[in-house]
Image (cartoon, rainbow, N blue to C red):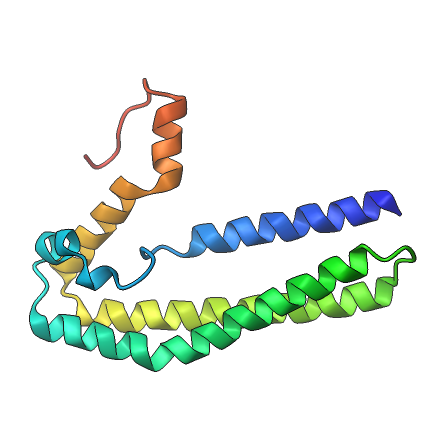
Length: 152
C-alpha cells in the first residue's frame, strides 16, 4: 500500500516536471522585455498583436491551471487517506490527466497564435534565445563544462 502511494506521488511529480519542461516560451509577457524586443526586432504592431493574443487566452489559462491544481490537491488528499480507495484515485488521476491535456492544448494553441505573429527570422532568433537560456541546458553546462556548446 505504501509502495503504491509512493509510486503515484513519483508519477505525479514526473508529470509535473515534464509539463513544465514542455512549456518552451519564457514566462510572462516576454514580448515586452527590452532584450527580446531588441533581439527579435519586434514592431509596436507585433507587440500589440501578442498582447491581444495573451489577453484573449489569459482567463482560459487561469481556469485550466486552477483545475489542474485542484485535482492535484484532491489526488494528494486521496493518497494520504489511511485507507486507499483505488477507484477514487483512478478517477481523480484520469480527470487530472484530462485537465493537464486541456492546459497543454490551450498553451500550445496560444504559442501557435503567437508564432503566427512572428516572421520566420524572428522565430529562429526566438528559438536561439530559448536554447541559449534553457535552464536544463545551463544545468548540463554547469555539470559538464567540457561539453561542447550547441548553436552558440
